[in-house]
Length: 117
Length: 321
Image (tube, rainbow over the protein chains, first blue to last red):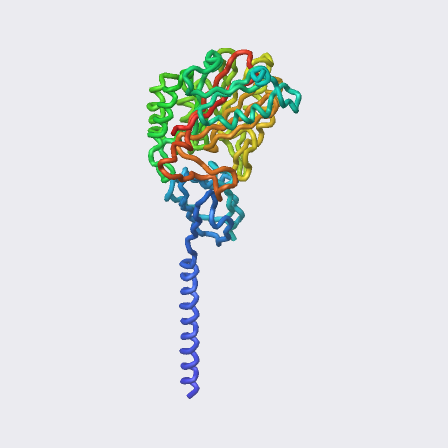
């Protein structure tokens, strides 16, 4: 009787541990898959949305939908796109937290900001 | 009796010898092929297409040149799918002028995307004027290389980002570059080195020397919300204060605009490619699409005449159609 109780307790303990480990591993995988790609649209001489906040590791893609070429240039020279004609894209992956103001070097009144947390 | 009063200065509120009412009346006619010439502080106007223009010698002037701007070679969207065609129409207009120009000034945005074939195309079309063209870059001409290719093509004798000066028939021409090193949220910019050069370049000129400054972005504040101005142009104009006649020719805004401030006449040219909205009349300053049969009436070239001894250069805008 005592041995059986012990065996059952041990089995339950092993089962619980197995579930915990499996659950833990699963949530790690889910966290990596949860980072969505973020889109910023360039149109009518403006970035939309102009200010965004994203988690570290996010890739932001700017797409030019305007009928005039634009560029995406970081104020602090962290990133710089080539000139983007209509429908052309530029992507940057933000590996470090911080605030990244940027502008269009062709039309400097166009400004935007990416906050990475 | 009537003729006598016509030549008198009637409204000289600023006591500077300029008949402003006459000037404004004249400017209202400009753009329909009217030549306004300043003589002794009074504006006289002559229609360009009249066969026997009174004072034809005056209309001929001693120096005549043409400003074109914003050809945007390579642009092909709704506002104008054929910018090569409209540039050719501008050249045809120039070749048809009663007084042929001695040379051309192109105030920038020669190309739309700074591509070699776009610059080549413009050069090819302008060749048929048989005249030399002096260029300054627009922001579309310096993409990806800070203007290196532009300077190689058009700025052999230029300094820094591409500024230079030259003289023609006693008139001093200054080409400035205000589209490089633009700062976030800012306007056009000349920069310290260029300003320093300008100060030295004009220092020893007699104040009676007529000055023509040409640059892409307007050197006066047209509409800052759209970036239509130059941050440090005040300093540049300060170096030109002593001169009796200063003409500033710009582009960038794709519409004609004039402003007179003392001895300085500011003028922006129409584009040969597509129009843009008037300040604040649209959500953004992009290409403005108009009915196809009206497009050419929004495009144009500018004819400039200088007659020695006269106060200001005569600046006349002509539409393409």
